Image 1 (cartoon, rainbow, N blue to C red):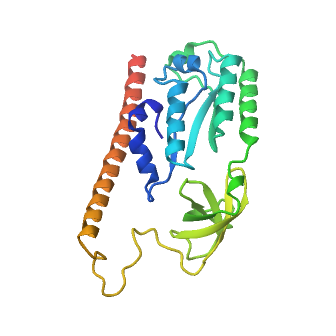
Image 2: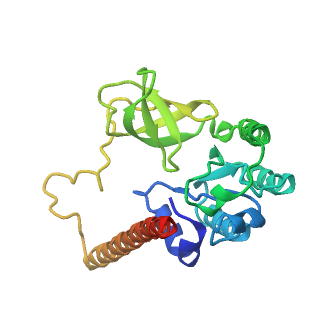
Image 3: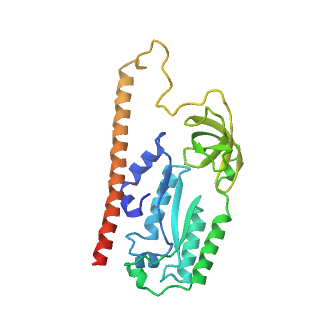
Length: 269
């Protein structure tokens, strides 16, 4: 998860990371509101345009990427016009994963001292946004697709395994003992609002999520010439770059958290 200002200058690198076969093409970017006025009152360091730049760039460079976001309904200064802008933003992108929250006055914050919007109106806006979210089905066009999913856990009803494809979309597969922790190729047979159901194409040999297929007997390295060695060095340099960028993103998130804690402490004083 990250906020727009922390990745605007690194979008090309992030797109490259997301395209790596061992990285889920999924990013959670909370926008909170589709109104610049509300974002300003929230003291957010970005605009709706910044958010749209992030989403548009990544959707173009990483086809199929899943972008998740958060919305707060009923911030004290949010007008009906502001809320309409939020509806328009969510309607434009049709986020497959949308976390809808009602404003909560966190003690010690400036917003906690603002005049609240009537509770019934907050509930009404929450309902309208929820209805918009429920009005579309993001996975219907994937019916019949062949996908490779990494099976990681048991479903809530304990009747299926849960796997995730490249875009971290949830795919339910039959509960066979040799599937857990493996890569399974499936055909999408059913789609729902929050999941897909896949039929395994080959149940005999699910693949472990290893870096490569096992080498043939007698093959030591798999390298046949200088060209292969050079290519391997390039791969190592790319992997090192991915690791460094991932570390930068992690440090940025920690610094944001630390800044927020310090801000709260200063407010308490």
